[in-house]
Length: 130
Image (cartoon, rainbow, N blue to C red):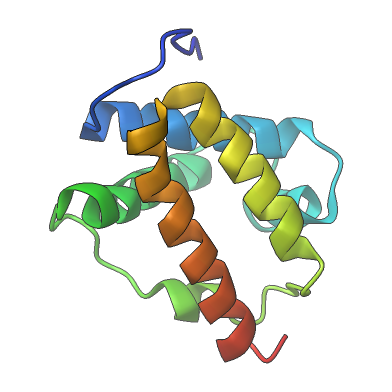
C-alpha cells in the first residue's frame, strides 16, 4: 500500500483508514511483543480477509472517536480480554501509534487521536488489571 507523504490538516474517514493501515503495516514490520500478539491473532498478511476485517473495524472505531461516525459496532474492551496483553506492551503501542499519527496528521488533528489513545490505554490497563 502506498501512503501519502503529505500530512493532513483535516480528519476524514479516508485518511483515518490510511492511518490505520500505516500503523498496522508498521506493527507487522516490527519485532515487538505488541507485534507478536497481533501476528499470532491475525497473521502476517495485512491483505488477508481477517486483517481487512480488523482494519475496517479500527477505521470505524477511530472515525467514531474523531468524527462521531456511527459505523463502529463493537466492544473494544471485550475484544482485548484474553489476548495476553501486559502492562509493558502499552508504552510500545502508544509510541508506535503516536509516531504514526505524527506522520499522518498535523498537530491539532493528531492531538485528537493521541489524547484519546492515552485514555484508552489507561482504561484498558485498569480494566484488564494490568
